[in-house]
Amino acid sequence: MNKFIYKTLLGAALTMPVLTSCELDQFPEGTIPAEKSWTSVEDADKFYIGLLSSLRSIAGSGVNKITEAQADMFNQATSTVTYNEIYDWTFTSSQFDGDGVWSGNYALISRANDILDNIDMVPVKNAEEQAAIDNIKGVAYFARAYGYSNLVTRYCKEYNEETANVADGGLPLVKTVDINLKPRRSTLEETYTFILEDIEKAGDLLPKMGEYTKDITVPQSAAVLALKARVCLNYKKYDAAIEAADSVIENGDYALVSARNFPTLWTADEGKEIIYQPLLTTDERAGGSMGSIFYGYNQSMSMKSASFYPTKKLMSLYETKDARYKAFFKKTDLCSGQYTSNGYIFAKFPGNPALRKANENENNAWYNAPKAFRTAELYLIAAECYYMKGDTESKAAALQMLNDLRVKRGATKFGEGEVMGDKLMTEIQNEWTREFCGEGFRLDGLKRWGLGIVRSANDIQDLDDVLRETPGSYDLVIQPTDAKYQRIVWEIPSIERQTNPNLKPNWE
Image (tube, rainbow, N blue to C red; front, top):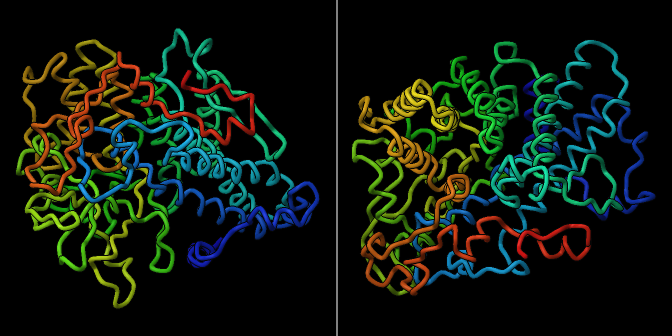
């Protein structure tokens, strides 16, 4: 399909609902008859546009805000009730803000399954139409793998080769559209195997890098490789993760931006290192309020007023010359209810002016396109995987990857022998936090590294009464040996366990 026509259709489609359950109920057994819906490539394109809409919703679903509130790099404001129980680690399985992550990703998986169930019946007239069908099918495999990869990190234990095929529950793997299915959980090994199978199928169908015109608004082969690297890191398949990451890094089409251009990633949603960033428009900005808990405004007080503020621990990880420090932390007058102070807000998601409507107040419009994959992640995946391989040569490669990223961000390069052994791994972990703070990576990292959640009174900004100082919240300490630590893996939503008794819960 012509690229301009496709983007016009996508922009229009994203402003309209796709098929709802009520619409589906008009047909027998809750589905639209396939023979009436899949008669041409144009029909397939309509389902493809709906799939891209779902991908965008998941990429900007707000899970970053939930996991950052649960982790240890932000403190809650006095006047907010946003994510109270999550911040305090008192949330229960029956009342939890993260349940939408489960339902949203399974909705994405269902859309992908619908395409995979039916697309092969579409009659194809020529090579151009076959290429279009292959692309849609490849993106469907990518979307299904992406949905399951999001779920496995939040709803399953950390991968352990000794128990993954025996005791550790994976996900209920839904491979077709069937509203009557009540699947059991697969093993964790089976879950990862299935995800990687879908990734391989996507890679076989989509054009390889160098064979397509780069378009970051749709998943292309670089996004498939980036997803493979992410999954293999968590699956502890370190060589495979390194190979996938290096394939994108060495290609050069998605090179890291310089320190000078780094702010543009966030102020304009532009930068060569963006691998996949779903399309947002001024008319359709769902999923774009990435920083809504970090960047609010009180109209009556004419001050910034966020729900969460960065800790001194987070800010202390950076050198002041680091481009990320300059972009992410802004000192300003701020308030929480009637309380006022002066301190730092987390300004990573300031809003893209191009997504602001005409005459819209800039203090109420902080929309950024969600960045599902950036090359910076691949450097950190490679660094961590090289380190985990354990030999001297691999650790040297880990240091090189770490330094390559740091130099691009304007930070000081670590010298040989300066950060060896455990200290090198600590700096890799710190670099994950420096680069991806606020994007939802921190909680998954703590889980992967087997580290506790530690908030200290010494790390809270001195903001008078603006910050909540309830004992056991701002000074929270939960170690892996504590009973509460099981909440680092989220419980399957109670409604799912009630309707499907075959689902074994995470929390005993």
